[in-house]
Each structure stands twice: as C-alpha cells, then as structure tokens.
Image (cartoon, rainbow, N blue to C red; front, side):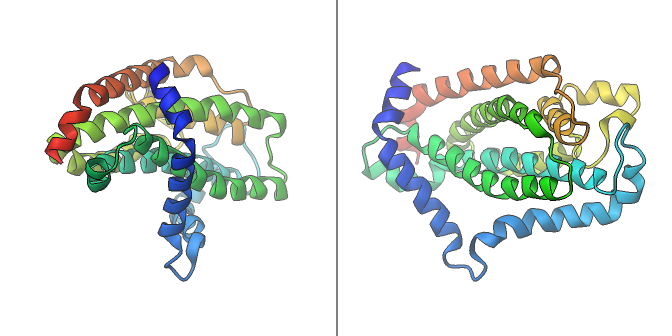
Length: 264
C-alpha cells in the first residue's frame, strides 16, 4: 500500500492532466458540452417522478412538502450514478488503455485512480446543482451535509475495489464486461433508489440488506430526506465488503499486472 501511495503521489501531475483531458474529450466535441452531465440524470429523474411521484409521496414516513419524493429520488439516483459510472468504466479501464500500457512505462495503478477522480469530478458538478436546488427550496440539510463525506468514502472504496477486481478479470475473461452491464440493470432495482425501503415487507427488507448499496443509499436518504444522522452501524456489512474487494482487487492487480500486458 505504501508503494502504491508513493507512486500516485509521484505521478500526480500525470494523473491530474489525464483527468482534465478525459473531461475535455468527453464533452468538447458535443454541442451542449458538459450540459449532458445534467441532462442525462435529469431525464431519468423526470421520468421516474412522473411515474412514481403520486404513489411514493404518501409512503415517505415523517416527510412532508411538495419536493419530498423528488429529493428522495435525486439523492438516490445521483449517488447511484457515481457508483455505476465508476464500476462501468473501471471494468474496462485496462482494455481501453491497452496501447498505453504496452508503450509507456508508468505505475499502472494510476489508471484506476484517473477513472475514480474523473467520476468524482462529474459527480461533484451535478451534485452541486442538487444542493443548490435544496437551498432554493428550503430543504438544505444544514450541518448534516458533512455526513455525506464518510458515506462517499465508503461508496468510492467499494466501487473502486469491485471495479479493479472486475477490471483485472475482464482482461482474461471478456464475458465479465457483458455480465457487469446486465448486473447493473438488476442491481439498480435491487437497491431502494426509486421505491421507499421502509414500505417493503420485512422479508424483502431482509433480502435487500444483503445488498451493500442498500445501506449507502439509505444513508443519503436519511441525510437529505429525513434530515437525520445516517445509521453508520447499518453500513458495517458494506464496509466489510468494500475492504474485502479493495484487498482482493489490489492483490489481483499486483499479481497479474505483467500478465495483463501480455494478454492485451
């Protein structure tokens, strides 16, 4: 771990310039540019709000106001989007950068770091607009906003560890990439993003608790919808899984770093 941190610090200039170049390349050739960051999740939020608003509004316990379900939906979809983007991009990061890995000598761990930082940058831009919406409508959580920091750290660690693990496996077994695409579609509906967790039957809540993302999304809902302190104890399973995948991902990465170049 110490060697990895030293390598990241030594190549911080390369990492930052790559993040900047990634952001520019994604939007500079489009007419609307970075506005797509907002339009894509906004379209999804609008669709789900129109379909589920009347049904779910009354099912939010101890929550009132015309924007309750919209806030519930935004806090879930935007943060789920960060997880899904990290996982989707991380599982192909080594394949997409095959030429770079073969021709340039640099710490390969920089590639996952670049992906994570790029995803966080995109997330912060759109999430800042959500916070502005909360402030304008009088629903800003106040000092409770600081609780999103530890939840974000747990979420990013989980997504990164799982992403690196899948990224290494995808180099040797290309079916992994197809599997992740299908998995994320089912995973989204197995996570209480659109529907209200507490309105589910007890047996269904029990099954959802095995999903590491359930506690994370519930934590965001507690902050932004209910204005309460998130239950970090309920995240113990997510923290354990995040640590396991981080250790497993780094182990596979270090063991097969040379083999990946040959395979690519």
